[in-house]
Length: 439
Image (cartoon, rainbow, N blue to C red):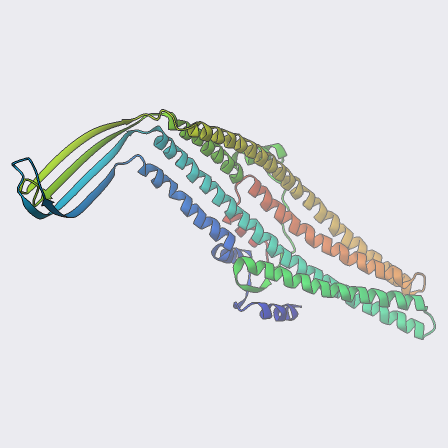
């Protein structure tokens, strides 16, 4: 099986071949998953909102310098102090200006808003990090499920082919019938088609895992036979839902978004408020000539208290305030939507864990019962009491029960991880715990 899959994958990838367990796969995904890396850069970019907003509260210092070459030709003047003729002189001028906002409510609100934006980005990145754990686990166990499916399909194919040989021998010896042969032959063709499909699914699951890791992982460690199936603790769905509504990073993100839009309403309304700035200006002007015939250098120091009160801006501020208020209400609805979705996810994961435990036990019993049923029907067929179709159906049911049993164990693990994700506590330790259940 692995040789066939390896041949398919080598044609599509050039990364080195490797085998890995869940911890190793997760470590690769943290480094190479484009989605997580994108959220990481977005998180770092969002962190710059705070120093940018703080800058609006701090002094602004500017320095201006100019050089002017002046050429004048005095044609006529009734003022006796002016000299006749031409004057040609340069002028150097330097200005240093410091502006310190004293009262600007929009800038102050923007600083508070920036803090919420940073918290918003933190929650968004945490959501992406926990999502990666779930995506890695889903694709990892999809590979194992696909390997199980191929293994069981091939075992069923061997059993069907043996049944076909028995039917053909019985027919050749005159103790069988043509129907048994045709039933076995048709089932063998069907199982061979299922084997091809299982190979395709296995190849696709390997490629899906490689999308996260950017590595060709041809072998993954299988799940151990004896894994302790533990009930959620506490055994109360309401407690888990309550924790999810408080701690889930998606809800925290929406709460921060609600804060951001609330501050935006205040910031836009501040467009009606006055502004007060303190300005200090130093100017040095050195002119090497003038209409009076002599040069001069003048230094000036200005301290200005500037008050600005917007009176009318065509309704722009009022409109922007209304727009911000509507967006604030939308963020309230988004928070409610997230709370309902998280509540549902936590509940589904909680009962998914309990259901998976029951399914594992039930399918264990089903496998034992189907194996006994197959043995009994095989003896009945050998004795000529029943037909080949009954044996073929029993073989199919046995391997279907084995698939269901294996899938139920994977579902148990995935629901445990999703329950931790719903309450916002999914972390690397959970990955290590699940990896310890592997062979």
